Image (cartoon, rainbow, N blue to C red; front, side, top):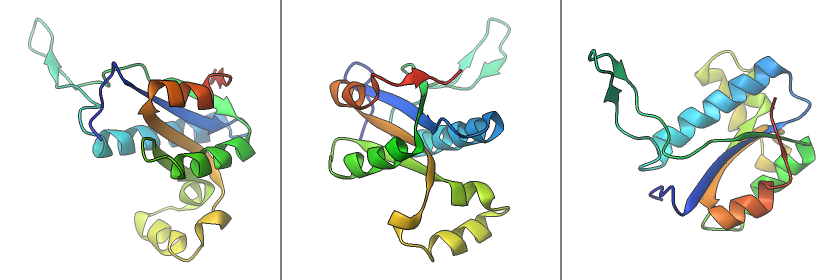
Length: 140
């Protein structure tokens, strides 16, 4: 998918029971994954008047919202049924691993329905993402 800020919305939904530190970790990992995966989501670098380089940022707002853990899981199922929505699930398993090698080994040994999510990123048509997340509170 090529991101178009006039047509698409991007958001991150965090399990409301997650501690602030783990919530920040989940949001940052999902943001990095989005930036790596979605074409045209991040703009080009810019320079200040005195030539200090500032990395490109996302072309549209990226709200971070709160939801019950069961709804985070439901969002993954809903997104899986819709070809227009990109989902970036983030698991409790990932947060429990110390290395990427440990994560790779452990995640590949578990069926997806048994992987507890602590957050999910969603990107897709504005109307669809708003229908799924419009009633959720901002993470504060």
